Amino acid sequence: MHRLLTLFALLTGFSLLFPACNSGGDPELVVTNEITIEVFLPAEGEVISMAASNSKIDLKVQAQAEVELHQITMSIYPEGDESNPIWENEGHGDGNELWEYGGEVALSNFNTMGNFVLQVTACGEHMCQGSNIVTVLRNFEITP
Image (cartoon, rainbow, N blue to C red; front, side, top):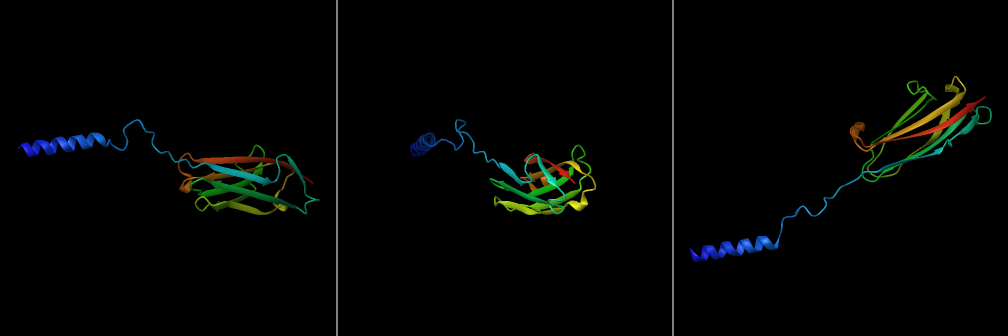
């Protein structure tokens, strides 16, 4: 019996020397998945002449996430009419690798001149579920 009490006392002593992993005083590890979007073309407020641009607009966009980048959507719509896009494109990120889009959009699809918005949205979760969604807007003008 004496040996059993001694063993119990030793085990209790060792357990006090090594507290539990999360003793309440240590902050828990929080992983963030910050997403950045950069629009290089068109420039903010740029005026694009259909005649001077050969009826094309150049787009250059980059997106990246610290941990995971999933769906990227882009659309161009007349200012104030987001529900009426005149150009749309979708892409998919791969982990935290840099995602890039560079290309031309034919202005012949644009029936009207005026102010337009390029909207780029990137998501950090599959199918844009959750709250980790970043949107960048770029305003520009198209003239004859």
